[in-house]
Figure (spheres, rainbow, N blue to C red):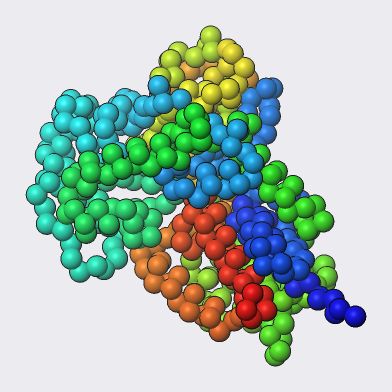
Length: 482
C-alpha cells in the first residue's frame, strides 16, 4: 500500500498584507512542488488586512490606511494581475496631478518636472514661488558637486542637504517624508528608504543628470506594465478600493486557514527543531515552519525565549504612530477648486496636519457628484505627547482644512483612523541590522520573517519580501530532489 504523506504545517503569525501574501504564496509554492501543506494564519484583530481598510460611507469610498501603490516597483501590479484583479486597476487623474506646499500661509505649487525633490525642467523651476533664489542656486549646484565615494550610510536629511541644500530639505524633503513614511529625515537611512538616490549619485554623480536619464526609462517601464489598453500612472489603486486586494487574498487562502481575534504570545522551538505557536488563550499550534509577519517589536516579544539575539535586533527597529481623517463636504460650500492632488505641510509651519489629499481630484469615482472628499494626515499626538482620540483627530483635521483651504462650512461627516506603532522607521544602519537579522535566521531553520519592517515598507516591497520568504520556507520543507 502506498504510504500517505502527512501535510507539512505552516503557521503565519499576522494577517496584514504581508502575512496574507505570505500565506497565499506558500500555497502556490506548495502546489508547484506537489507538497501537501496546511496553512494557518493567526491574526489578533477580528479581521485581516492590517492597515488596509476600505469603507463605504454615503456612497463615498474611504481608505483608512494606504490608498494606492507605486507602479514603478512591479510587485504590486504583478500581484494584482495574479489575483485576477487586472480589470479593477485604476489610475490617478493625472490631468490634475499637482501638489502644493503650504508655506507662510500660502499654497505654492510644486514646479512641473520636479521628481522626488529633483528639478528636471528649467523654466518651471526658475519661476517657482516656493524657493528663494539662493535656494534655487543651491539646488543647481548638484550639477557640479562631486559624488560621495566612501559608501557609508547617512541620514536622508544629511544626503538632501549635501546634494540639494537645506531649503530643499525644509520645504520638500521633510514634508514629503513625513507624509509617505511618517518619519524624520534626520534619522532615516537614505540607503534603506531612498536607495535610488544613492544609486543615482554613485552611477551619475549628479541627481539632476541621473533623473533626466531615468525619466525616459521609467516611462517605458510603465508602458510595459500596462495591461492591454489600461492606463498606468505613477500611483495605482483599485476600483472599489484596496480592500479588494485583501478580499481576493482571503478568498484564495480560504476561510478555513484564517484564525482571527487570536493574539500570539510566543513562538517556541524544541530540541528536535519543531516549532510551537502559543496564544493568549492557551491554544497552541504545532508547526514545521513559522512565518512571523507581525510588527518587529511584536515579533521580538514572541521570539525572546527561542531566539534572544534575534529578538534584540527586532526590538531595536523603531515604529511611529500615524492617523488619517477623511471628511466629506458639499461642493457648493467649498471655496476652492480642488485643482491638484493635495498639499504637504512642512513641520516648520507648526500645523496639526502633515498633508491633505483632495481625494475626488486625485482618483476617479470616489464620491457622488457634488461631494468633495478630503483626506488629512494628522499628527497623532498633542504638543505634550498625549495621543489624540477620534473626536480630537477630527477636530484637528476640520480646523486645519478651514485654515489652509478656507472652507468655513462644516463637513457632512468625518471618519478617523489611528494606527498605533504601525509605521516601521528605517533609521541609519537599518540595512546592516537587517543583515544581522538574516544571519540569525540561518541558525533557525523553519523560521522566517515577512512584512514591511525589513527591506521596504510600501505595498510593492512588502509583497516582494513576503513572497520571497514564503517560497523559501516551502522549498526548505520539500523532500530533497523536489
